[in-house]
Length: 316
Image 1: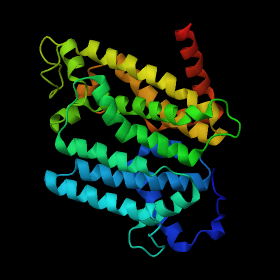
Image 2: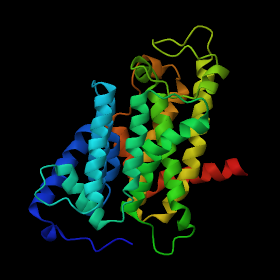
Image 3: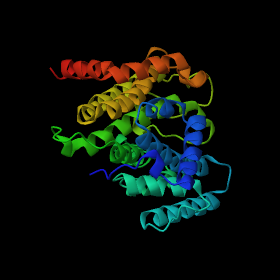
């Protein structure tokens, strides 16, 4: 149950300043995410910004140029900060604005903070350079770095009173997170390879002759790269269709937020499907005007209804 949300006047100035910092980080670093959460009422938007700012800190440690042992130490320091938040020992005058904002968000909404521990665990997998033999193996990683974010977000959104099947909402939020992460993996396949990381399952790579990896603007000689991409796109679409079952359980603005963020990634998936080798030539993205259009469709419910109809047709 969501606690009574404070009015603007009831939020202490140091907490408002901490939220402003988190919103600035979100606006600068997470364009797709920012397009979605702008549809939320202010208290929920701030809480989501606090979650993003914490997640951004964790990701930046994992993606940085520090030695692996230093990264691990920094990640455990961040876990210690999270423990202070969990135990209610972060004061309004704490010098870390992310801790202050996250602590206030966790007091206001029933956020399952253990999901942020999972995020740290997932980034530690990156630091160790783990690879994944099968989709089941990769799902463990995706659930840590993205499925957990879906469940954390659900803590802010809440479900509508009396929503049918609401007990499965965390499962659907988790699945939607997997869909977003798999889309990210496809989009960033060359960038990740250049950084020494391979996320796609080894058995999928072998099936399509792509085990040699991707480090240039062309697929490996003799590889069926388009076949690999289309295979993973189908998997992502099935995850989106399942995850979209969450939307009817949310209030209108929370549902619009989720539909907008998911809609942006589905359109990225469409572009990747049309031109698989585009991900080897550069970063696939959407222009701002198209993101704004997706946000409007999300607010109107058009994207959600469209995906639901397609999912029903496929099942029948």
